[in-house]
Length: 410
Image (cartoon, rainbow, N blue to C red; front, side, top):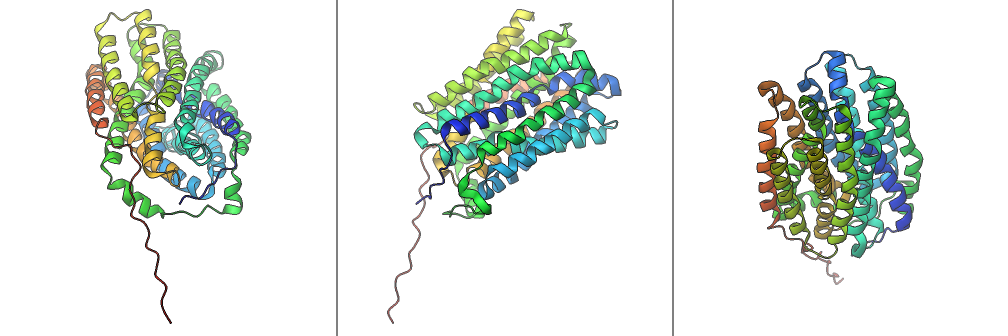
């Protein structure tokens, strides 16, 4: 029997959680705009910048596991507060770093750890604990849509900041703006975690981990999410440079990334709503297969501003729409007691894919002078992910009932 921990209203959770994700994900989605200004100013290769962002993604995934553990044990409030401070420090470090090592430390490790504490896994833990199962997928869709709106809102703002103030001052401005997450975190304080006391749990952390690691559907879900990370981070970071290489002005890239964010507001919300009605594994399979088709058509068609905007809009619908059904499957199978931690493990797989997507983009570009090979890998992986998600069993796991010791006769 699970102990209820509900203490926050759905409106409060969604308003504060959505605003936090909007800031955190919105800033993060614009990092591709800094690739050329920073590498040109510092005389670094694209691989140097790509490696730092790759480290950011793997750091985000790695620290996300522990952020989830802490959030499940002590509540999300402290984790979000810490993440906001790290985010500000990381952005300031990006602006002042003058060596590849310092840049990787700030843009990579610090911001990666910050994102672990201010994005989906932690926010979804609050949603899972406080919103009923029949509305959970919808609520996760709302939170994911907020991250997409953040991309639509923040990427053009970041482009304008770079244009008017220069890339260094733009990062300093953002390092202050991200601290707005601190007051928003107060809206996600759960009374059930007061004084550091967590609700009674059926399983320990190790028991929950062993159970999930041995469950085939959890493994399929992680494998599919790996592909999601590879595709979206490669496109998000390298598409601005891909377009500049093809002689498009900078504003085309800014508008393209903004369109991805705008249309993903609808895509993630729709995925959350459909997750209440349809098999979530089929939704995921359809998303991954559709991505492969959309990328193929984009590469085959003549490259014009119109084709870029159409690709961005359609890809936007599919961008983060994997997030609500993936996390809802985890909650549906294993329950919500360790949702942030288990969601963190699934997301770590996503971030391993992100690391490879952004890093290989830089390595193969430097080796071949184009992105053709990485585009091809993204297509093949999309087809593979569609097949991997189909055998997932979404039903709640059957746990053996605990034995109650029989009374001993004196």
